[in-house]
Each structure stands twice: as C-alpha cells, then as structure tokens.
Image 1 (spheres, helix red, strand yellow):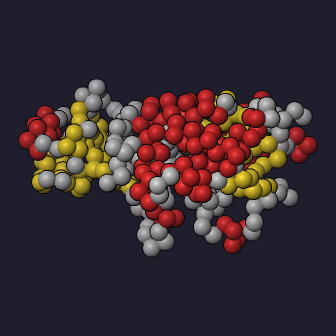
Image 2 (cartoon, each protein chain N blue to C red; image 1 turned 60 degrees about the vertical axis):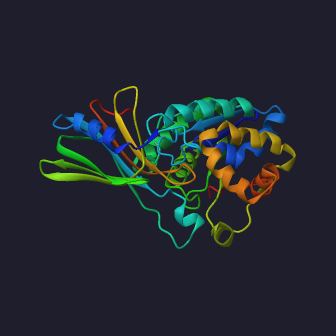
Image 3 (cartoon, rainbow over the protein chains, first blue to last red; image 1 turned 180 degrees about the horizontal axis):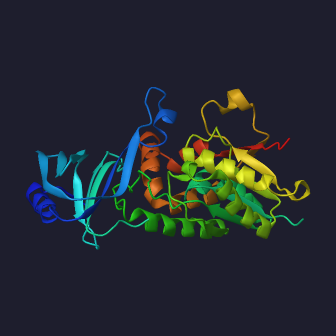
Length: 117
Length: 219
C-alpha cells in the first residue's frame, strides 16, 4: 500500500460512485487488548461484502490520517484514520490505517466484485 | 494404540508460539504429529512490520507461512477452512463433528488444544471447546488424552498449576524457527522485544521457553 495522495484517492472514489459496489469496513484494537492492558477494552467491528451504492464519496484530511465518507441513498458509510491505499489486482480500492508497528486499526475497501473468503 | 499427536488450534502461528517446543520433542522421538488448523487468520491485525500484507492478501500469505512452519516442525497439516473471528458463532456440535471425523481417522493418543474459557481469544475458546467435545464423542476406551492450554492472566489463580510443564529451552532453536516462518505475525511481536532487548533470541526464550498444559478430566 502507498501513503495517501488525496487527489489520486479522490479520483478512485469518484470512479466507483453510482455503481453497485461491495464494501468491507472494519476497525479493531485486537483480541488481546484487555489481556495485555487490563484498563483497555476489546473493541472491534467488521462488515464484509455489504452491497451498496453511493452517490457521493469524499476523502478529507491531511498528512498522516484521513477520513472517508460515502453518502448512500438512506445512510452513510464512514471511516476515520486511513493513511494508506492501493488498487489491487482485482481493481478493488483498499484503504487502511496502521499503527507504528504495522498493525491494522481501520480498513475501508470498495470493490465492484465481492471480496473473497 | 500407537502414538500420534493431534494439535487443534484456530490460527496459523498458535502452534508456533504455543506448542512448537512440545511438538519438536515428540517429533524427535519419531512420534507423528498432525496439526488441524481452523482458519487462515484472515482477520489478523499484523500486516508485517514494515507492512507487506493487506486485508485481502493476508489469507494467502498466512497460508504459505503456515505450510512453511509445518515443514520446519515436520508435522502433517490439515487446513479446516473456517474464517478467523467467526468460530464462536458456528455450531459447536457441527465443528466438533468435523474435528471428530479427523480423530476417528487418525486415532491419536494425545490431543493438544486450548483450554476453553481461559484462552483469551474467542476463537481459542470456541475451538478448544469443540475439540474437547470431539474427543468426548468417542467411546471412552478410545479417547486420547487431552492437554488443554490456558493463556488468560487468571488461569493459575483459578485452575492451579498445570500438570504438564515442558521446559523447551533445549529445542528453542526449532521453536524460534517456526515462529519466524510466520513472518507477517512475528515481525511486529519480535520488534517489540528487539526494542527492549539486545539478544532477541535469548529474550524470546525467556518469554516462550516453557509450554504448559492442563490434563483434561472428562469426569
């Protein structure tokens, strides 16, 4: 994955607007958070292959982290903290935010074909 | 009954961090070991450090790492095809039947798995419970021994001392090699140790030099 170039990423988001797409959205602090630190909580959520269509998508932010919002007909999809992106060999747009140790904290992925697994 | 050990854990690398020293001592005695690995760790957070995996490439990367680790340990590998993080939502009875079909075939003398309720990760707890149920489905006289591994911070307090405590420092080279085979996962964890210690292998040995198990009581 590459550090986000906001203009290039915005183009990729625009290209996938007003089409039926599959979304993977995820955030996690790991299954061991409260094991290693009793004052913290295990928190995470993911949705894989949500079939949606967004009329407008926008990336906002600067330097290290970005927010992405997708406006749906009757709702929103939102991710905060993404800092890298790539277009994979299936043409899917992958966005993710990693911590200093390379661990994934948040992911938002948009694909015109369903994600595997 | 000839000796054969079956290791049942949900994630690629559970075997390396948790039981590779014990596995090595069995293999040194020429006892066959089969690893039934539940998932491909598809939802792992570690993407390498620096990152080289994505959410989409991680399953295949971890699959190759798992195959390599099993070559290092010289164990037979079966990948069961469940999805990471979802094991606790499957039917325990169905997962147990699936595991039982392997046990019927292999007829192991020993099963190593996680101690349900004391294994921290929900997949560990769920797969450990299914593994124990799978053994329970066998006629009493055919049941292998079960060694259950507890990880939770409170396990000594609640369960007491584990009956099996293997000092694996003499085979640590092998254990370390099996951990390193899981590069995407080991990078992050070992760099943490590296920041604090000069000799990373020695530090890891102190941290991972003992493998402990409770002998499951079916009564």
